[in-house]
Amino acid sequence: MSYELAGTALAVGPASGPLLAALDIGGTKIAGGLVDADGALLHQLQVPTPADGDRHELMAAVDHVLDDLARLPEWSQVRALGIGSAGPVDIAAGTVSPVNLPGWRDFPLRSEAAEHPAVRDLPVVLGGDAVAMAAAEHWRGAARPYRNALCLVVSTGVGAGLILDGRLHTGPTGNAGHLGHISVDFNGRPCPCGSRGCVEGLASGTAIARTAAELGWRPGPDGDTTAGAVADAARAGHPLALAAFDLAARALAAGIAATATLVELDAAVIGGGVGKAGAVLLDPLARHLAAYATLSFTRGLHLVPAHLGTDAGLVGAAALAREALPVHR
Image (cartoon, rainbow, N blue to C red; front, side):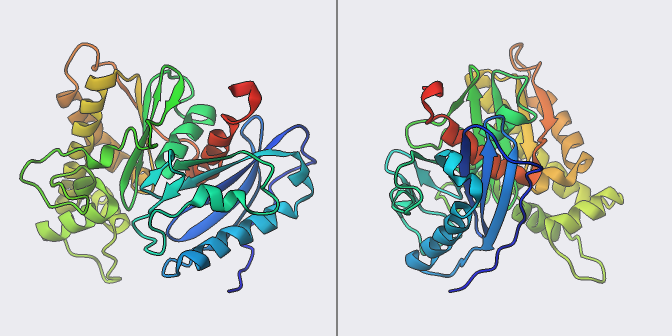
């Protein structure tokens, strides 16, 4: 299989000091980058994910990204590799089983990446993509001012990571804060996880498009039925599109309020593709959150949009790797 480099160096001048290598693995692309000790993304490149490939084809794509990173002159300054992957992940076992990559089931990604010739002498740290986003937003983004934050990725699915007492809280397997599979509707839609009425089944981009269609919303002449098209219709005031986003916001608010009640939060950071919908999501989310987060220690919760956008995956993977450096132990 052959690949094309799809990215450019972002560095303005030569990097100084230790660097962190980062991989961001998703269903459509595998991205790699180099990040400096301050969290600045210096280089970025990517290849398409061979989503229908077997375990060997998928790992070959990862190796290709590592090959290209290792050719950069600054590679000699790399001190650790962080990997953020679509999940589920198990950081204790070092394995991944991404729902949208059937070729990887309980795949030992951490140990396989550690076998790459350029990586063998480096610590390798694995985490889920939502946890990596939380680490990124706490290091360089919207969660930076807060000691306790829930950072959400609202996209094709709904994931989240937790910052507690100023530190990333992963849990033993790396899945702490998995907001998307909190049940908020006892008699709701069956979820692929085996439960029903999960936040993800109501608030993901796929769910918003489904809800809009069930309510009777129909796309325009271009036939676009995605959540983005629903968001455009909602901005134009279409009542059924607005209703679909209102239901999604209500589900998110219930999940955020439940989490805030359990662990006490200062802020909820909203990122991901659906999070970019702006006011059509955030306005009803704020309204519903005020209705659900009613206890005295939850009422002051700040609701803020994520800052890092598409850079969050690589910066977050680097943030995971940063924890492996001696100064952070």
